Image 1: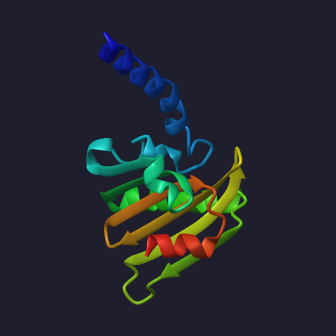
Image 2: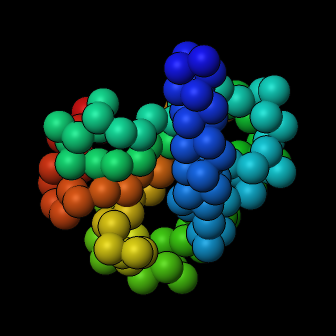
Length: 150
């Protein structure tokens, strides 16, 4: 009986916390990518981490997607990231582009805080392989973010 009550309590807590995780990056233009509307979920490798595993980085939520995209998908994701850079009051952003090969690009930005949490977005493209990472938490230094992502 205790085991069932414990399992029920865990399931109840998971149901209550799930909407917070689903809507963490809501309000951003890149959100459709995380929802599988730009690239199908089956084509992406998705990672979600929250809780104690992130506390040493002063983060509370980490979500990333990685996929090998078509030229059209890559262009669409790039457009969405650029829209977020322009419209979400990004406090700082850095962009690296390999002008020789035109196949490598990295964009990292600190977005405006939401609900007391600092938010970060990173976009990396190497050829047709694209990785987009969303993070939030108490981490307040853009330099510290760069160290985490190395």
